[in-house]
Each structure stands twice: as C-alpha cells, then as structure tokens.
Image (cartoon, rainbow, N blue to C red; front, side, top):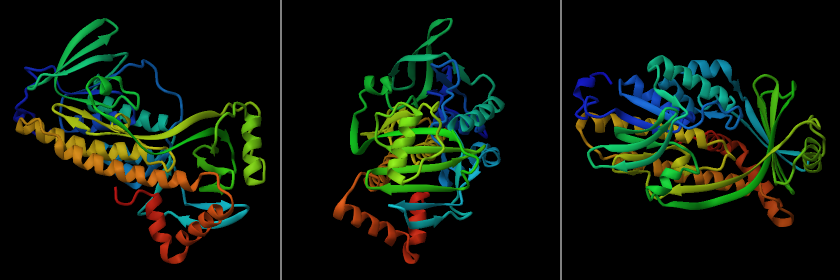
Length: 382
C-alpha cells in the first residue's frame, strides 16, 4: 500500500491485515498483489511440502494479465510454451482449426512451475509471509475483526486479522462450517489423463470429438504432451493407450509404465463469496470444470477484484466486499456455462446428435465465426 499509515485497522491492534487460508496459485497471487501494496498479509498452508503434480496447465490472456500485475508475467512467458492454435477432429477429419493471436495468447505451463514463480515472488515481497504446516481450524467474524484458531508446529495459537480469505479449495471445511451454501451447477463427467514424453508434441492442441467421447492432446514445455480422455476406470499405460487408439484410430506414444490419473470434472458455486470480513476465492468459491482450462485463470482474475476491494476496505475502515462478490459470481457463472458447453461437445454421441455436433463445429470454425470462436476458447470477456 502506498501509504500504510492511512489504514484505519491498525496492525498495532490486530496481528495482520489479511490472512489467506490456502497457498495454491490463486491464494499466492492474491498474497503477491496485497504485499505489493504494503498490506500485512500472511498465507496459512497446511501442507509442508510442495505439490509435485502438474495439474492446471493453461494460461489465458486474463490470467497472464494478472501474472503481470503480480510481477511474474515475464518469468511465466519465458518458462511456458506458446500454443499457436488448435484443431478439432472427428472420425479422422479436421472439422475446424483455430489460431491464437498475440492479442489472445494461450500459454502452457504446469501448475507446479507457476506456483513456484509466485512463491518466489512473495518471498521477495514479504519474507516469511508464507506459513507452511499451518492449519486454520476455526474462523469467527467478530464484527470489527476476525479471530482464527491456528495449529502450528509449536501448538495452537489465536490469530486476529481485519479480513480472512478462504482459498483452501473445493473441499473447504471452513466454508462449510461458516455456512456458505455450495450449489451444484450443470456439467459433470469422468476423465482420465496422463503427461508423457513426446518430442514431436509441436505447438498445436488437438481435440478429437469422437463418437466414444473426446480425446484431448496438449503439448507441454520440455517435449511433453498431456492426453485427456473422457471416461474412467483406466489404471495402466496400456489400458489408457488402447482406449485412446480405439477412438482416434492410432496408438499414441504412451508407455506401459505410465500411470494415468482419473478425475471427475464437476461444477459448483457458492451462493455468495463474501460475508462480513470473510471472503471465498478460487476453488473454495467456485468449482469450474477443468475442461476448457478456465478455473485457475478465473481465480486469478477474481484475486485481482478481491485485492482492490480489500485495499479500499482497509483504507476506509469498511467491511463491505459486496462489489467483489458481485463481479466474482457473475464471472463464475459465465465460465461455468462455457465449461458445460465444452463438456457437452465432448460427450459420447451417435447418429443424428453426432452429425449435428460435427456440423456445429464446422460452422464455429468457418470464416465468419472463427474469430468469435477463438475468443470463446481464450476467455474473451473475462
């Protein structure tokens, strides 16, 4: 903050201005934005070690803008792979091809690398702001401040703050205990994925919208490729490889030693994402299907909204975060509608529904609509 002395909620009274629960990429980006403004922020993360999984990989233009604001955009560009575009296929035919412009880029970077960049940035801005091995067991909004019960390696402590942000994921226990209503939204399906070596992965994504269900192939940095198949119950590299081959008509380069990961893509939304001095952010506020790559980027955009709202509230001595809640919920609903559409387009289909889908894809990839379709898949409007 440019003038910390303006804060009406003084850190001489409270332990911190803001406590963030959860050190995922969304919580960490918010912490960086707040620390840049001179706000006293700490991040409590129950895990002691880093998550080695690649998880989210797509960075769209709105997310890249937020990484720029947090001071890690240049590093993310240097470490990531720029996708030139994507091709949509079905039954051996290319139905549509989209190119990504410099104004609407799509970059690919495994989440653990993005997270490392944000962690290093926060360390530079505020050494010691990240508290690993720190579990927040209870949160109570006292009206003028928030009281937290925190388990640290040294034992349980009480911590006070002007605001608390729950960024602790889809399965947030604190969200449930504080009575935030969690609603299911349209869009749910099982998928299987694996990241495998592939020096020939190139710089274009492939989406095989096949009768048996979608198969996605995304190039990754370092000569890797991510395969995603709609459907579950595949536990070995051989099973995964054969299932893909049955749909796309060729065997991908997936070794028997590969251990694919199954997951269920679902969508949920909290009725509100701010109540008093408590705010929800990222997956704790909205579960967005990873099909379409919007979830992490949306979390970053909403982190920017929340950072602005928190700064204003701290300066003015207010507790109203309603402006953040309105914008965050509107954006989440729009993202979930897009994800539900993507999931429908990738569902198994035969006969007339399959022919109708293929016709729609051709129309969306045609000259008059190609630019609009490209904007749709690159999160234009967020």
